[in-house]
Image (cartoon, rainbow, N blue to C red; front, side):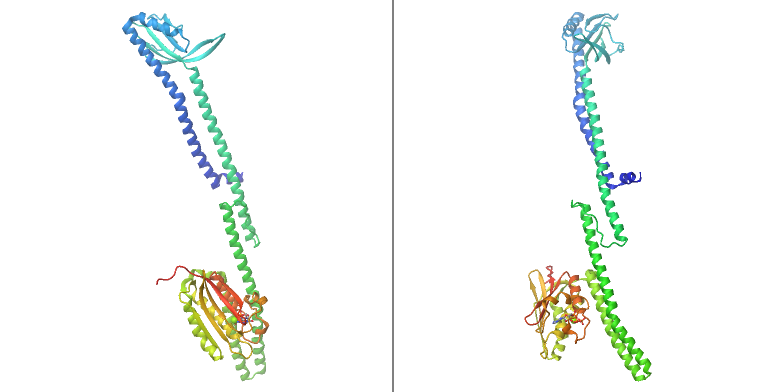
Length: 464
Ligand SMILES: Nc1ncnc2c1ncn2[C@@H]1O[C@H](COP(=O)(O)OP(=O)(O)OP(=O)(O)O)[C@@H](O)[C@H]1O
Ligand SMILES: [Mg+2]
């Protein structure tokens, strides 16, 4: 019962019903037109023929008198064409014609009448319907001219029945089709509803059913599935971050606690001071780590995409190079850059600068072999559809098998343990690239590492 009400209230069914009504209306109009053009017109034609004949006979009576009309009526009654004639005297006796007497339906004045007619066909007698015009001539004579309209009436009946059945069949088929269609549609909507319930109940791996017909429901299911995919990977990312955070913050926090406890135990004010200073340093590092993690999470979630603007990446390159040049010189190395102007990208200026800084920072830290000075080259160019910003050094580089995992959070290679760092720099870079629909590509600079930021070129350039 419930299911039936649901079916009748579904939008597909209502649509089908609407179409059904329109369809029925047009079918009726079409059949009505056919009916009008056949049965009704034929009947009218018959009436006109009868009227013309009455007129002609009346004229004849006027011109040639009683004998004239008797003659004609007799002659015409003789052919067996379904015509009916009767001429009676004022006293009601038959003078001429193929009817025995005036039908009881006649009312004496000029009028149309219909009456039953017995027709002999061989030995069979059939009851037909006749339609006639009854008029009175001068002198009290009655004239009746008519036709056997049985065939016409049957024809009209057949057409009416055909119309009725055609309409009935159209209605039944349309109704059935509508019900079938909406049942099918409802079943699929129910499946989608069911799937979303199980997903809400915690089964994040669940997906919407796809029928494979690529219709609008399928496209909706596919879009929802894509969204679920995204949500699932975001949730996995969050889980990973929180376990990473828990794991990696435990060590510094334990360290802080141990130092503070040791200072308290010693009771010396100098140790207190030392412990507090250490705690401040350690907290700074912790804050830095937190901020980096938050930036990565934000970039990866794509939350900042609304804030993107078309900017010239060459200005960012210039800023970052300005910032790091003194540090490179301090380390006795050099930082050179060559960037073409007009590297238009849709980007978040601050995040992109942060990403580039992380790469330059890495090159400064790891980009020189033991005893040598760093030699870093930052460049920017348009390559096909992309803007490519690269940072190249001449250090030990990263082995091909490690290039995939160094972008994961907290991953640091063994060779770098002696240098400060959290292993979050490249994660942020790759998160920022994801946000910008670009990619981070690590390559061998032979020797050294070349890190490339590949961003889609924004063809809609600023004026000028
Ligand atoms: N230019 C490079 N040359 C050689 N190894 C590199 C280079 N850049 C990164 N690496 C390796 O990749 C690891 C991950 O780098 P990432 O920038 O993510 O972390 P980090 O520099 O160790 O710490 P953080 O950037 O958070 O301070 C580094 O620890 C280092 O082992
Ligand atoms: Mg780094």
